[in-house]
Length: 80
Image (tube, rainbow, N blue to C red):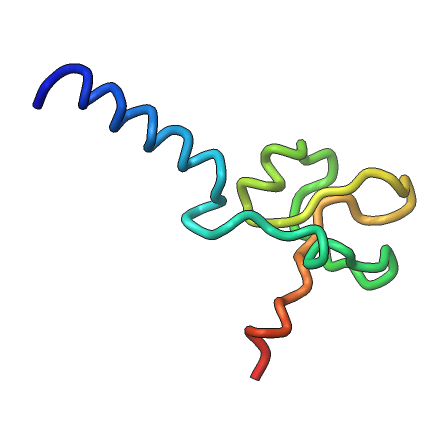
């Protein structure tokens, strides 16, 4: 394999990994629009946004009284 092709392939893999979480598409804003009282904890206290996103969860520290790292709402399309 030619060096330039190899580099382009490596760059494509790296860029692709930023747009997904564990092989899944990034969560949408709608999926992460969970009311603070309805949030289910997805991480340890003090979890960083990056660690939370890497677990496939939503992160919002806008409300200091609410859970910051939480599970997303399922898409309507996925419900039975």
